[in-house]
Length: 342
Image (cartoon, rainbow, N blue to C red; front, side, top):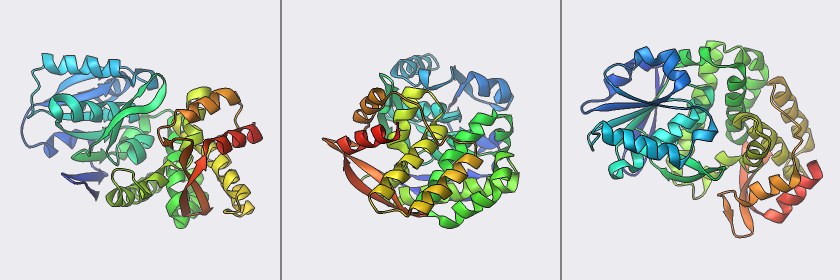
Protein backbone atom coordinates (compact mmCIF):
# COMPACT_ATOMS: atom_id res chain seq x y z
CA UNK A 1 0.00 0.00 0.00
CA UNK A 2 1.17 3.53 -0.83
CA UNK A 3 0.37 6.56 1.33
CA UNK A 4 0.38 10.16 0.05
CA UNK A 5 -0.17 13.12 2.39
CA UNK A 6 -1.93 16.43 1.83
CA UNK A 7 -1.33 19.07 4.49
CA UNK A 8 -3.95 21.79 4.93
CA UNK A 9 -4.07 24.60 7.47
CA UNK A 10 -5.93 22.58 10.08
CA UNK A 11 -5.54 18.90 9.22
CA UNK A 12 -3.58 16.25 7.37
CA UNK A 13 -5.24 14.09 4.73
CA UNK A 14 -3.91 10.59 4.02
CA UNK A 15 -4.51 9.04 0.60
CA UNK A 16 -4.14 5.26 0.82
CA UNK A 17 -3.56 3.63 -2.57
CA UNK A 18 -4.18 -0.10 -2.46
CA UNK A 19 -6.07 -0.15 0.86
CA UNK A 20 -9.34 -2.13 0.94
CA UNK A 21 -12.84 -0.73 1.24
CA UNK A 22 -13.76 -3.02 4.13
CA UNK A 23 -10.92 -1.63 6.25
CA UNK A 24 -12.28 1.92 6.42
CA UNK A 25 -13.65 1.46 9.96
CA UNK A 26 -10.12 0.79 11.24
CA UNK A 27 -9.19 4.37 10.36
CA UNK A 28 -11.92 5.84 12.60
CA UNK A 29 -11.05 5.86 16.28
CA UNK A 30 -14.30 6.74 18.08
CA UNK A 31 -17.84 7.98 17.55
CA UNK A 32 -20.84 7.16 15.40
CA UNK A 33 -20.06 6.33 11.74
CA UNK A 34 -22.50 7.34 8.98
CA UNK A 35 -21.89 6.13 5.43
CA UNK A 36 -23.28 8.19 2.55
CA UNK A 37 -23.45 6.13 -0.63
CA UNK A 38 -25.60 5.65 -3.73
CA UNK A 39 -27.95 2.88 -4.82
CA UNK A 40 -25.47 1.29 -7.26
CA UNK A 41 -22.57 1.14 -4.80
CA UNK A 42 -24.85 -0.07 -2.01
CA UNK A 43 -26.04 -2.92 -4.22
CA UNK A 44 -22.50 -3.98 -5.19
CA UNK A 45 -20.63 -3.40 -1.92
CA UNK A 46 -23.17 -2.70 0.84
CA UNK A 47 -22.29 -5.88 2.72
CA UNK A 48 -18.90 -4.33 3.52
CA UNK A 49 -20.36 -1.26 5.28
CA UNK A 50 -20.14 -2.83 8.72
CA UNK A 51 -20.81 -1.01 12.00
CA UNK A 52 -22.23 2.08 10.30
CA UNK A 53 -25.55 3.82 9.73
CA UNK A 54 -26.28 4.09 6.01
CA UNK A 55 -27.74 7.00 4.03
CA UNK A 56 -28.39 6.02 0.42
CA UNK A 57 -28.95 8.60 -2.31
CA UNK A 58 -29.65 8.37 -6.03
CA UNK A 59 -27.14 8.52 -8.87
CA UNK A 60 -25.97 11.05 -11.43
CA UNK A 61 -25.34 14.78 -11.58
CA UNK A 62 -29.09 15.44 -11.38
CA UNK A 63 -29.10 14.64 -7.65
CA UNK A 64 -26.02 16.73 -6.82
CA UNK A 65 -28.16 19.55 -5.47
CA UNK A 66 -29.04 21.44 -2.31
CA UNK A 67 -32.29 19.44 -2.21
CA UNK A 68 -30.29 16.24 -1.71
CA UNK A 69 -28.14 17.94 0.92
CA UNK A 70 -31.29 19.02 2.78
CA UNK A 71 -32.58 15.45 2.76
CA UNK A 72 -29.30 14.17 4.17
CA UNK A 73 -29.36 16.79 6.94
CA UNK A 74 -32.81 15.50 7.91
CA UNK A 75 -31.53 11.91 8.01
CA UNK A 76 -28.57 12.95 10.16
CA UNK A 77 -30.95 14.60 12.61
CA UNK A 78 -33.05 11.44 12.70
CA UNK A 79 -29.89 9.39 13.37
CA UNK A 80 -29.00 11.78 16.21
CA UNK A 81 -25.68 12.61 14.59
CA UNK A 82 -23.55 14.98 16.65
CA UNK A 83 -20.10 16.53 16.47
CA UNK A 84 -18.44 13.21 17.26
CA UNK A 85 -20.06 11.58 14.21
CA UNK A 86 -17.74 10.58 11.37
CA UNK A 87 -19.04 10.74 7.77
CA UNK A 88 -17.72 8.34 5.12
CA UNK A 89 -18.59 8.96 1.48
CA UNK A 90 -18.43 5.70 -0.49
CA UNK A 91 -19.09 6.11 -4.19
CA UNK A 92 -18.19 8.14 -7.24
CA UNK A 93 -17.52 11.84 -7.60
CA UNK A 94 -21.13 12.85 -6.94
CA UNK A 95 -21.20 10.96 -3.64
CA UNK A 96 -17.80 12.30 -2.55
CA UNK A 97 -18.71 15.90 -3.40
CA UNK A 98 -22.04 15.68 -1.56
CA UNK A 99 -20.69 13.79 1.45
CA UNK A 100 -17.79 16.21 1.85
CA UNK A 101 -20.10 19.22 1.59
CA UNK A 102 -22.57 17.76 4.09
CA UNK A 103 -19.82 16.84 6.56
CA UNK A 104 -18.20 20.28 6.24
CA UNK A 105 -21.43 22.17 6.95
CA UNK A 106 -23.51 20.01 9.32
CA UNK A 107 -23.05 21.36 12.88
CA UNK A 108 -20.30 23.60 11.41
CA UNK A 109 -18.18 20.62 10.44
CA UNK A 110 -17.76 16.91 11.10
CA UNK A 111 -14.77 14.65 10.46
CA UNK A 112 -15.04 12.74 7.22
CA UNK A 113 -13.29 10.40 4.79
CA UNK A 114 -13.83 8.97 1.31
CA UNK A 115 -13.75 5.60 -0.41
CA UNK A 116 -14.03 6.58 -4.10
CA UNK A 117 -15.48 3.77 -6.19
CA UNK A 118 -14.78 5.13 -9.69
CA UNK A 119 -11.52 5.84 -11.49
CA UNK A 120 -12.55 9.49 -11.95
CA UNK A 121 -13.24 9.91 -8.24
CA UNK A 122 -9.99 8.22 -7.24
CA UNK A 123 -7.85 10.64 -9.26
CA UNK A 124 -10.01 13.77 -9.00
CA UNK A 125 -13.13 14.33 -6.89
CA UNK A 126 -11.90 12.65 -3.70
CA UNK A 127 -8.48 14.36 -3.67
CA UNK A 128 -7.80 17.99 -2.86
CA UNK A 129 -10.56 19.10 -0.50
CA UNK A 130 -13.08 20.60 -2.91
CA UNK A 131 -16.62 19.70 -1.87
CA UNK A 132 -19.82 21.08 -3.32
CA UNK A 133 -23.03 20.76 -5.28
CA UNK A 134 -24.48 22.14 -8.50
CA UNK A 135 -26.94 25.02 -8.58
CA UNK A 136 -29.48 25.60 -11.35
CA UNK A 137 -27.58 23.13 -13.51
CA UNK A 138 -24.16 24.81 -13.16
CA UNK A 139 -21.26 22.75 -11.86
CA UNK A 140 -20.13 23.07 -8.25
CA UNK A 141 -21.49 26.59 -7.78
CA UNK A 142 -22.01 26.06 -4.03
CA UNK A 143 -19.16 24.53 -2.04
CA UNK A 144 -16.31 24.63 0.44
CA UNK A 145 -12.64 23.74 0.75
CA UNK A 146 -12.26 21.04 3.43
CA UNK A 147 -9.91 18.05 3.46
CA UNK A 148 -11.03 14.48 4.24
CA UNK A 149 -9.03 12.72 6.93
CA UNK A 150 -8.47 9.76 4.62
CA UNK A 151 -9.10 8.62 1.07
CA UNK A 152 -9.03 4.88 0.32
CA UNK A 153 -8.26 4.10 -3.34
CA UNK A 154 -9.18 0.42 -3.64
CA UNK A 155 -8.38 -0.75 -7.20
CA UNK A 156 -10.72 -3.75 -6.86
CA UNK A 157 -13.71 -1.41 -6.88
CA UNK A 158 -12.97 -0.44 -10.48
CA UNK A 159 -13.75 -3.91 -11.83
CA UNK A 160 -17.50 -3.34 -11.49
CA UNK A 161 -17.49 -0.09 -13.49
CA UNK A 162 -19.13 0.36 -16.91
CA UNK A 163 -16.55 0.92 -19.65
CA UNK A 164 -17.62 4.54 -20.10
CA UNK A 165 -16.73 5.27 -16.47
CA UNK A 166 -13.20 4.04 -17.15
CA UNK A 167 -12.97 6.44 -20.10
CA UNK A 168 -14.10 9.32 -17.91
CA UNK A 169 -11.35 8.62 -15.38
CA UNK A 170 -8.73 8.33 -18.10
CA UNK A 171 -9.68 11.83 -19.26
CA UNK A 172 -8.64 13.28 -15.89
CA UNK A 173 -5.51 11.11 -15.77
CA UNK A 174 -4.52 12.49 -19.18
CA UNK A 175 -5.05 16.01 -17.82
CA UNK A 176 -2.60 15.46 -14.98
CA UNK A 177 0.04 14.15 -17.37
CA UNK A 178 -0.52 17.01 -19.81
CA UNK A 179 -0.06 19.79 -17.26
CA UNK A 180 2.82 18.39 -15.20
CA UNK A 181 4.48 15.15 -16.33
CA UNK A 182 5.72 14.46 -19.88
CA UNK A 183 6.99 11.04 -18.79
CA UNK A 184 3.55 10.05 -17.55
CA UNK A 185 2.06 11.23 -20.85
CA UNK A 186 4.52 9.00 -22.75
CA UNK A 187 3.71 6.07 -20.43
CA UNK A 188 0.02 6.51 -21.23
CA UNK A 189 0.81 6.61 -24.95
CA UNK A 190 2.66 3.30 -24.62
CA UNK A 191 0.15 1.61 -22.30
CA UNK A 192 -3.24 2.99 -23.36
CA UNK A 193 -4.56 -0.49 -24.26
CA UNK A 194 -3.61 -1.88 -20.84
CA UNK A 195 -5.17 1.16 -19.16
CA UNK A 196 -8.44 0.58 -21.02
CA UNK A 197 -8.31 -3.07 -19.96
CA UNK A 198 -7.75 -2.08 -16.30
CA UNK A 199 -4.41 -3.87 -16.13
CA UNK A 200 -3.72 -3.61 -12.39
CA UNK A 201 -0.04 -2.49 -12.41
CA UNK A 202 -0.74 0.11 -15.10
CA UNK A 203 -3.85 1.47 -13.38
CA UNK A 204 -2.15 1.61 -10.00
CA UNK A 205 0.74 3.57 -11.50
CA UNK A 206 -1.59 5.99 -13.31
CA UNK A 207 -3.70 6.54 -10.18
CA UNK A 208 -0.58 7.01 -8.05
CA UNK A 209 1.09 9.40 -10.50
CA UNK A 210 -2.12 11.44 -10.82
CA UNK A 211 -2.51 11.75 -7.06
CA UNK A 212 1.17 12.67 -6.63
CA UNK A 213 0.73 15.50 -9.14
CA UNK A 214 -2.54 16.75 -7.68
CA UNK A 215 -1.48 16.45 -4.04
CA UNK A 216 1.77 18.33 -4.67
CA UNK A 217 -0.15 21.19 -6.30
CA UNK A 218 -2.78 21.25 -3.54
CA UNK A 219 -0.08 21.29 -0.85
CA UNK A 220 1.31 24.45 -2.43
CA UNK A 221 -2.05 26.11 -3.17
CA UNK A 222 -5.01 24.61 -1.30
CA UNK A 223 -7.42 27.51 -1.88
CA UNK A 224 -6.84 27.80 -5.66
CA UNK A 225 -5.28 31.26 -5.59
CA UNK A 226 -2.59 30.46 -8.14
CA UNK A 227 -0.94 27.20 -9.17
CA UNK A 228 -3.95 25.01 -8.36
CA UNK A 229 -5.75 26.67 -11.25
CA UNK A 230 -3.64 24.46 -13.53
CA UNK A 231 -5.84 21.54 -12.47
CA UNK A 232 -8.63 23.22 -14.44
CA UNK A 233 -6.93 22.48 -17.77
CA UNK A 234 -9.68 21.62 -20.24
CA UNK A 235 -12.41 22.37 -17.70
CA UNK A 236 -13.67 25.74 -18.89
CA UNK A 237 -14.67 24.32 -22.26
CA UNK A 238 -15.21 20.89 -20.67
CA UNK A 239 -17.81 22.00 -18.11
CA UNK A 240 -19.66 23.90 -20.83
CA UNK A 241 -19.65 20.80 -23.05
CA UNK A 242 -20.73 18.56 -20.17
CA UNK A 243 -23.65 20.81 -19.29
CA UNK A 244 -24.94 21.43 -22.81
CA UNK A 245 -24.22 18.12 -24.56
CA UNK A 246 -24.60 15.71 -21.68
CA UNK A 247 -21.49 13.54 -22.07
CA UNK A 248 -19.51 12.39 -19.01
CA UNK A 249 -17.14 14.69 -17.16
CA UNK A 250 -13.92 13.02 -18.31
CA UNK A 251 -15.10 12.82 -21.91
CA UNK A 252 -16.04 16.51 -21.88
CA UNK A 253 -12.70 17.45 -20.34
CA UNK A 254 -10.93 15.46 -23.06
CA UNK A 255 -12.63 17.51 -25.77
CA UNK A 256 -12.04 20.68 -23.74
CA UNK A 257 -8.31 19.97 -23.47
CA UNK A 258 -8.00 19.60 -27.23
CA UNK A 259 -9.84 22.90 -27.73
CA UNK A 260 -7.43 24.53 -25.26
CA UNK A 261 -4.46 23.08 -27.15
CA UNK A 262 -5.72 24.58 -30.40
CA UNK A 263 -6.13 27.94 -28.68
CA UNK A 264 -2.57 27.72 -27.27
CA UNK A 265 -1.24 26.99 -30.76
CA UNK A 266 -3.08 29.98 -32.20
CA UNK A 267 -1.46 32.14 -29.52
CA UNK A 268 1.98 30.81 -30.44
CA UNK A 269 2.52 29.05 -27.12
CA UNK A 270 2.24 25.44 -28.29
CA UNK A 271 3.84 23.72 -31.30
CA UNK A 272 1.19 22.42 -33.69
CA UNK A 273 2.62 18.85 -33.79
CA UNK A 274 1.67 18.57 -30.10
CA UNK A 275 -2.00 18.96 -31.08
CA UNK A 276 -1.72 15.92 -33.37
CA UNK A 277 -0.03 13.91 -30.60
CA UNK A 278 -2.72 14.94 -28.13
CA UNK A 279 -5.55 14.12 -30.53
CA UNK A 280 -4.03 10.71 -31.32
CA UNK A 281 -3.93 9.76 -27.65
CA UNK A 282 -7.49 10.96 -27.07
CA UNK A 283 -8.61 8.80 -29.99
CA UNK A 284 -6.76 5.76 -28.65
CA UNK A 285 -8.42 6.27 -25.27
CA UNK A 286 -11.85 6.41 -26.98
CA UNK A 287 -12.31 10.01 -25.82
CA UNK A 288 -14.05 12.56 -28.07
CA UNK A 289 -12.02 14.92 -30.23
CA UNK A 290 -14.93 16.73 -31.88
CA UNK A 291 -18.17 18.13 -30.49
CA UNK A 292 -21.48 19.09 -32.01
CA UNK A 293 -23.04 21.61 -29.68
CA UNK A 294 -25.14 24.74 -29.80
CA UNK A 295 -22.75 27.75 -29.69
CA UNK A 296 -25.19 29.97 -27.77
CA UNK A 297 -25.61 27.38 -25.00
CA UNK A 298 -21.85 26.85 -24.74
CA UNK A 299 -21.26 30.60 -24.53
CA UNK A 300 -23.86 30.93 -21.78
CA UNK A 301 -22.25 28.11 -19.79
CA UNK A 302 -18.82 29.76 -20.02
CA UNK A 303 -20.28 33.00 -18.65
CA UNK A 304 -21.47 31.01 -15.60
CA UNK A 305 -18.00 29.46 -15.01
CA UNK A 306 -16.96 30.09 -11.40
CA UNK A 307 -13.39 30.90 -12.53
CA UNK A 308 -14.69 34.04 -14.25
CA UNK A 309 -13.62 37.40 -12.84
CA UNK A 310 -15.49 40.21 -14.55
CA UNK A 311 -15.00 39.98 -18.31
CA UNK A 312 -12.02 37.62 -18.06
CA UNK A 313 -11.40 34.07 -16.95
CA UNK A 314 -8.35 32.26 -15.56
CA UNK A 315 -7.56 29.82 -18.34
CA UNK A 316 -4.96 27.04 -18.55
CA UNK A 317 -2.84 26.67 -21.68
CA UNK A 318 -0.06 24.23 -22.52
CA UNK A 319 3.40 25.40 -23.53
CA UNK A 320 4.47 21.78 -24.10
CA UNK A 321 3.46 18.34 -22.88
CA UNK A 322 4.05 18.52 -19.13
CA UNK A 323 4.30 22.31 -19.01
CA UNK A 324 1.28 24.54 -18.40
CA UNK A 325 0.56 28.16 -17.67
CA UNK A 326 -2.44 30.08 -16.30
CA UNK A 327 -3.38 33.23 -18.18
CA UNK A 328 -6.29 35.65 -18.08
CA UNK A 329 -8.30 35.47 -21.29
CA UNK A 330 -11.28 37.66 -22.18
CA UNK A 331 -14.50 35.67 -22.33
CA UNK A 332 -15.14 37.24 -25.74
CA UNK A 333 -12.03 35.49 -27.04
CA UNK A 334 -13.29 32.13 -25.76
CA UNK A 335 -16.63 32.79 -27.45
CA UNK A 336 -14.77 33.37 -30.71
CA UNK A 337 -12.87 30.11 -30.18
CA UNK A 338 -16.18 28.25 -29.84
CA UNK A 339 -17.38 29.78 -33.11
CA UNK A 340 -14.12 28.78 -34.84
CA UNK A 341 -14.44 25.16 -33.74
CA UNK A 342 -18.17 24.69 -34.29
